[in-house]
Amino acid sequence: MNTDELRQRLEFYQDLGIKTLYRRTVIERAMPPHPQPPAVVVSLPTLEPKQDSLLNILADIGDCKRCRLHEARHKIVFGSGNEQSKLVFVGEGPGADEDAQGLPFVGRAGQLLTQMIEGTAAKEGIPIKRSDVYICNVVKCRPPENRTPQPDEMEICGQFLYRQLQAIKPKAICALGGTAAKALLGVQEGVTRLRGKWHSWHDIQLMVTYHPPYLLRPYNQNAKKEAWEDLKKVLHYVYD
Ligand code: SF4
Image (tube, rainbow, N blue to C red; front, side, top):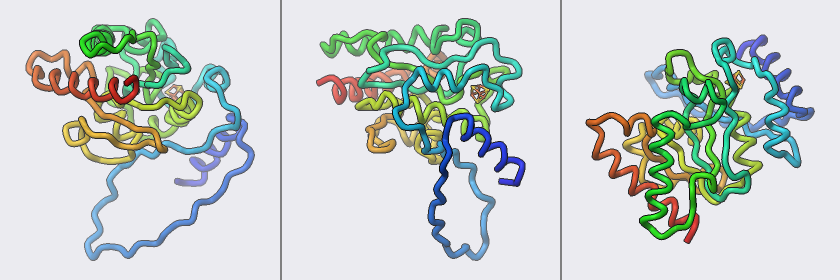
């Protein structure tokens, strides 16, 4: 990080009301004989104000221009659902419908997510609806042309996701797709390796499954079945 980026980061923390920063001990590791270029790993910052709440976070976001994604957005998509939910779904970022309405997962992929949650719950005898869970994204503004959010965008906006998850403190998180999984877990593996297994995010159980837009493609029917299996695991873990 250069001096300018560091200054911007510190100003951002100041915006959040964070006055004190602690430096983590850095463990020096021996370099391999032929060092490879470092893989880009997103790490969500771990600072949040005391007594945080979703309302505080929303107020802090304000008319956010902290990253380039503000340039083309129409509405910030903060999140929706039950703020005391035991289960939070995290996608990667808003699409066109979400950008127009300011709500997460409201287009075709959103309808599929609703079916996945409510259909699986009904089949498994778990009395929940989509409105009982909380849904949000890693970035709150739509990336142009629905491109994947870039690591710096996820890192800047990920601070709000971190605070949302800490404020809600769900029993489990379900990461929808590889981008959300990578942002939350700070790993490089793709969704096919990560899905279907339990991981941990700050002591909260985290399941990875496919991103609903991916499941809309007709040739991904097997993935659809796998996503339903993943969801079954999550719902039983949270609501049994
Ligand atoms: S994506 Fe997040 S950090 Fe970037 S402008 Fe939108 S709200 Fe701000």
